[in-house]
Amino acid sequence: MPIKGVKGIISYDAMETIRNTNEWMGASARAIASYPAFALIPHPAFKLMSAWGRVTERSFSRMVIKPDWEIPPIAGAEGQDHIVYVERHTRRVFGDLIHFRVARREPMPRKVLLVAPMSGHYATLMRSTVTSLLSDCEVYVTDWHNARDIPVSEGKFDVEDYTKYLADFIRVLGPDTNVIAVCQPAPLALAATALLAEQEPEAQPRTLTLIGGPVDPDAAATEVTDFGNRMTMGELEHLVIQSVGFKYRGAGRMVYPGLAQLSSFIAMNAETHAKAFIDKIFNEARGTASEGDKHNTFYDEYLAIMDMTAEFYLSTVERIFKNLEVAQNRFTVDGRHVDISKIKDVAIMTVEGANDDISAPGQCVAALDLCSGVPDSKKVQHLEPGAGHYGIFAGKSWRLNIRPLVLDFIDDNASDAKPERTKRRRKTAGSRKDDCGVSDSIGDNSKIAV
Image (tube, rainbow, N blue to C red):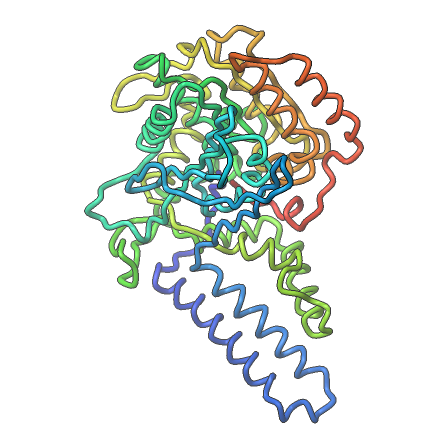
């Protein structure tokens, strides 16, 4: 997860005031420049002003809205569309387990638990990943809650609590579950599996796929890890931790604000984002933009951010990035050592992108060496050429190459594995390798840090 914070100290309410003011300014500019009388003045300034207002209002309003899943219907073999319903399977204070039920379809044999990151964005960031899996799998997702909406009376939530939540979710779904963890939760999903291996071996998942996660952050340096090593924990807490304002249910809770996280996201690739917004404003002024264009589709999700509890953010930085507790197999839960070498019966797969500058190649594959109790025949690693961080779970690289390999991995380790079926899929995926790593959206180049 990203650990880069904003410079200086801005209170929670001050950040919300800045956001609200910009939203109001955008709405005012849109309303003033769209006044019918100005249509009689043939000057492009009014169209540009109105376009700037529309883009600005929309952008800043998205920052406090949780996006909908909006999963399209799934086409069935009989030619009918099957509506997808988002249902809460298990309710917890800090996050729920949700199930995507496909209407009028029998449960699929592949049961997948997609572990979404808790790193500033909602689980809906995985929308395209969920959609791509639904035709072949029964999909469940961890839906983490915005910390600003959780009362202080509900207590803390740190990396140990996160790990226990994952273990509970896996336990509820059963031993035929295939876990796929994307980025930030990769080391904690590994720890949760080890926790089950020691306490309830019969509840372990069947497979564990880790995609672009910082299992060993020191294996390959990135801007994220460098920043974490430069900053002390005291400096981080002083600079980025704030108390939720009285506008929200979690008033008084100490959090790492989503607005601060978004600032760091944008700062990591400011030129690309600036160009995207300038192009969007000119397209709006020319009348060539649309509601469902790539800019809106991407930024409606990218700008929707959530707060993390202070203890989760700080414990992640300290224990995962600085102290390397998972990387060195020293992670503990409730004072007890979680020994990753106790994992023996779970097949492990790691996926990395060659151009990933958030979790660089080497950080995720380190999980295979940690799982010393797993036979080599049940370990798989894949390095996707030309793919960035976003592309390995939601771009063309995922859809054309990585997804088929993950499904093969799940099938190869199923109790009723059919080798001839998986070989056919590998051949199909391999024939389209020329598309690997090519982005079809702003996302591949935007450095979404999850």
